[in-house]
Image (cartoon, rainbow, N blue to C red; front, side, top):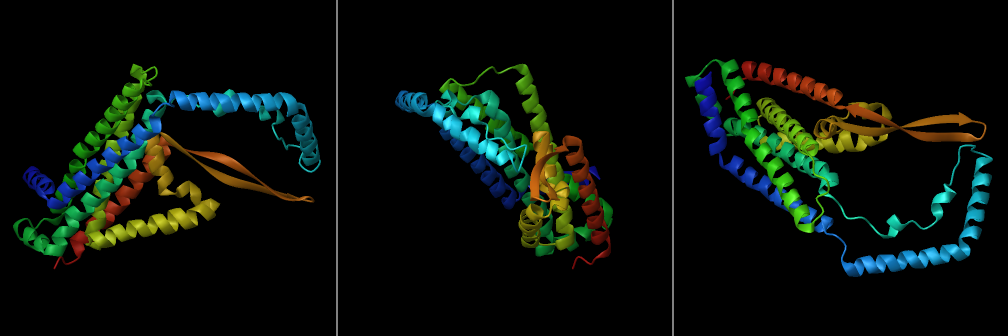
Length: 328
């Protein structure tokens, strides 16, 4: 088994498709860092002065017209509460707030987690693509049949290919995470906006990187197993896109009962540690129908278990298919 695995790993990294996909992932990392550079730039002195001017003008206007504005707000709020006792216009917050005009500088400590999560989706897409193409190419070229003449035990062949696909995603995932976090740290350091970078922050980022790496391994294995069933890279990518657009995008956004089962929420929970979604809670009375959005949470455990179960099912289907179908 180890000899088979070594051969498959060598073949995985020697493929042109893997190299091109890796370069593409590197390009995404560079684009992400460019976006971080542009979005994290502190306001210039001219922009700060202009924001201060706008705030002072708004404050001066509020001193003149604030009482009338508040009175009008309270009047509208009372009218709304006649039909909905819980209605609130939050009138006290209508006064100009300094933070509304003078945006604080972004800090690395606040943005590092989202930067890592953002690159995570690109890593998972990369892992799925290289996992699918790694196996599907052998069916397309006919080399799978030749390989089985040397090693006819299909279960061993199946396991070696899936394990090789999973291991092949480890290094790219780690490098992408390290590059994007390290690059973001360098950018914020250049701006002088690192914030209070503590050991706890680095620990959280390391755990996030570990979750991303494990997720990439699972997705690469998933891609390889899917390729054993559909035997075509284009078909596998089309299947993924169709599912995301139709089920996750169209149906998932309109059918509340389906939302707790959406895979995008499970993936988000694994990458971020948790994810949230909203359900409409509607009540009907004499005054009509009123709906309230209720926030629901998908935990890391929920997301991880759901994805592991999905992976196990697809791997099992792939094994049965590979063992029973002709590869010719």
